[in-house]
Amino acid sequence: MLFPGLLSAQKNNSFDILNYDISIQVNDSTDLIFGSNTLSIKFLTLSVDPISLDFIKKDSTEKGMVVSQVIQDGKQVNFQQDTYHLIIDIERPLYGAISAIKIDYAGVPQDGLIISNNKFGDRTFFGDNWPNRASHWFPCIDHPSEKATVSFTIAHPNHYTCVSNGEKKSETRLNSKEVVTAYSSKFELPTKVMVFGLAAFSTDTLSHPENMEHINFVFSQNDISGFKDMSAAADPLQFFDTYIAPYPFEKLYNVQSTTRYGGMENAGCIFYDENAVTGEGSMENLIAHEIAHQWFGNSASEADWPHLWLSEGFATYFTNLHIEHKYGRGKMNEQLIKDRNRVIRFHKMVQLPLKDTVSTNPLNMLNPNAYQRGAWTLHMLRNKIGEDTFWKGVRAYYQAFKYKNATTSDLMRIMQDQTDLDLSQFFHQWIEKTGHPLLSSKLYQGAEKQFLAIEQKQDQLFNFPLEVELKGKHGKSKNMLANISKKQHVIEITADFHIESFLLDPKTKLLFEKTN
Ligand SMILES: [Zn+2]
Image 1: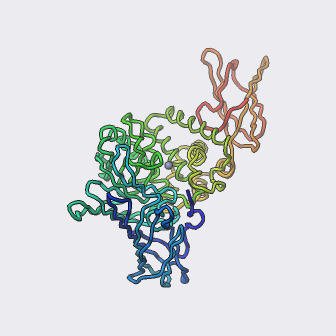
Image 2: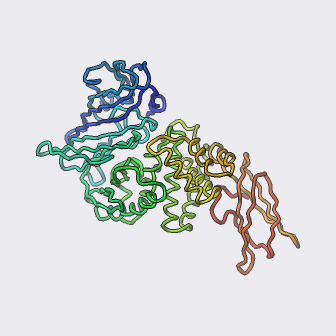
Image 3: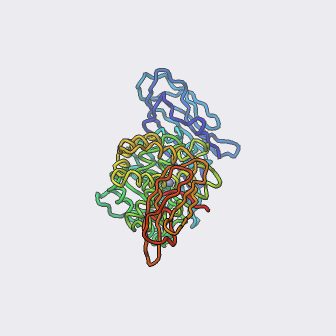
């Protein structure tokens, strides 16, 4: 897998892509697609060199795209393709001018638009772009920092139903066998979540308090089990709608698909792995995760890959918050313990800071660091600053960056603004440093006094509050709180009973590992 995006696909500050108007024609006899993408580009500097877009050229495998012509504002312009790019000799525009650049192309996608058979042997087409595979099937700046509105106009055999981002604009019969379906998103999206899908679907329309369109799409053979599993979408949608901000897009489709991921949060048109549908109601956490991404990742998007946890850590923690809201704190804590174990296991193999400036391949960042450590960091922040302040901060962060891009510093600044507590050490140790406390604990009991000794065994010391539950005979128990910052603490226990046993972090508030 190649990642040209890491080398070149950063947002180019000399122009801004406002809109992609993408038309694609597909057929059933070959995997060849005919495409046309008209980009609305606003020029932001006087001198603009040839512009370079990400676009994967046809190679020796015979897959990839060949551009036939490029037209700028009605006039043909010169272009060339290298392996990963389309380079266009634009006419030098005026500062602030907007050009329409139409690119016509054709080819068999190497990747990104997956044309295959689903598990029932039926032919399907699904966009699957994460992290930068959109450029296998439409020319773009394939990086989350370059957000744009998008329209898809798909000409396809009429036995498919077409799903895509945004609002469905039209469905027009071309002839007895072909239909053209058009969708348009009026909200700026990152390319990683711009998709369409084609399959023989059955649909189930769910009600929504504000009458927003909420439809579940499953393969016809899976209609009973699929509709049952996907009905779980209503609760997290309503929870996030109420607690974060109104849902950010025109509609919500949940779609059974052939994504390589368990689920892919495509804006307003979420694709779920076809095998996630079981009919046993086991999709709820997956669905909650992908719906949370509509706010965090799709609307408020990470500015670059090191900030991926702003998508994945948030989606993971908001799934946990949904569990807490619906099933109670005990259920959330069960999930947090699983999440913590994943962080601990992963840390034994790879040591990464949450703001991951170490990894160079986004696919390697789909790991328990971005997901579960991200979730745990939000959980500890919530415990540190308190429930109301945490939600105030979440809403302030979302409002500041909805439909925009954010960095980890943006989140830290907004959270710090909500509280008089100094969060700098908290952020430094949990976001910028690697690791977590590795704690040994031992009870010392004399005739009159009892002590608990806590030692941080890891190299870099952490600063954190540690709750300990002390248990005596006949159901006696008491919680104590210790502020740990040094390597070793010996704490005198003020309990009027003999301690029989103790439990560190009884309320599941600390990311730590126990050792002897
Ligand atoms: Zn995710």
